Amino acid sequence: MSKLKFILWLIAFFLMRNQLFAQINNALLSQEISIADSLEKKVSLSISNQNFLKNNEYYNNITTGYTLFGSLLSTQLAYQPTKNVKLQAGVFLRKDFGNSSIQSIEPLLTLKYQKNGYSFLIGNLEGNLSHRLIEPIFNYERFITNYNENGIQVKVDKKKIWSDTWINWEVMEYNKSNYQEEFAAGNSTRYHILNGTQNKLTAIFQGIVTHKGGQIDIDTNAIHSKINLALGFMYKRKLKGFFTEWNTQNYYTIYKELAAPASVAISKGSGFYLNSEVKTKYHIYANMSYWSGKNYLASRGGDLFQSMSSVYAQNKVTEKNRQLLFVRLGYQKQIFENFNVDVRFEPYIDLINNFFEHSYSIYVTYKKDFHLFNEKSKLKN
Image (tube, rainbow, N blue to C red; front, top):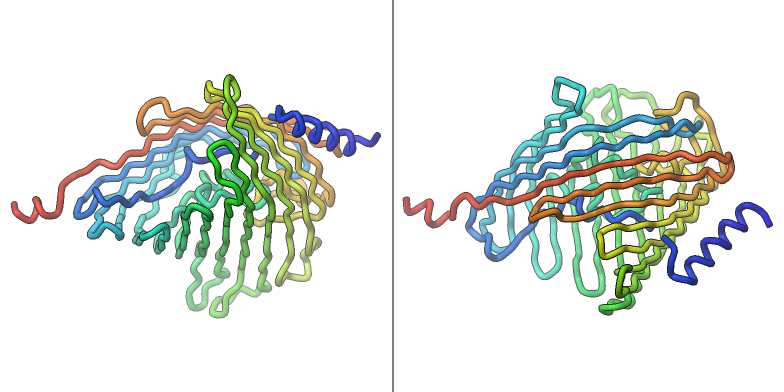
């Protein structure tokens, strides 16, 4: 029996027994903007602090190891003039430990309209991990390195469907700019086929189009656009006792160049991403993920899933076939109101090159909205 067949047989065996340790739950790190009837005519101060340590102990040809260690802080004033509209503005800071200067300072400005399960945002988006994308399409480290997304977003949150459509305008060009404009447009949709209290079955579609180009710059590089798609499903089942939930998520992914320079070596590819997870009553979870990719590239995807080396690699190499097996252990808990801890240990095996590597991470977050005053009472004074 070949190595691949053995691994697939092992995964199928555990799946049938419902004991296989999926796609990581990033809900504690998401960036949603709350709107509530009780906040109408009120001014509040919103504070979001996320502290991170992500250490990649990698020594492979696709990407080498590095450490992300620091703190993110968003401080914003928010005003809700009606029960459906919220305005907020503030500043974002990123501070890397071991660096005396601030790594990033950015202004924040968002208008959000929400009604009957639909919402529209312009400005800073509910982005990054809030899109609920899988790692082969979206690198989770962008939560640290590219925290803010700016543009337009339309979301649907109904009983049967959850959907997020957005344009993230990443680089704005101007007349005679010596660089190209860059943006990413995406959609993430989940349709609940079965949505019971014990069992849930969800069909999932995800896609991102990325583009570099423009017409008014003086950059001579060719236009470059690509698309990444994922089709899949998720099944969840509630359990009783020590194990509280078992779920599986499985996807088929597609990569294709829409417009590319002649130097692009790989123009299309695909992959399979199989996941399953078990959660315990002690907030500990374990999951197993299997990735099989052929000629797969994703400009916003996780480095390990690529068929070409990342910017961190020592040498530029191509591995057309990638087969990885992840076994992840984690602990996620709200320690007290608004204060969360997320600890992860993520070893993996490269099944083609026969080596074992790992990463580990710690995220400590605090998010809270502080009520300052009501508009009416303030006007009376």
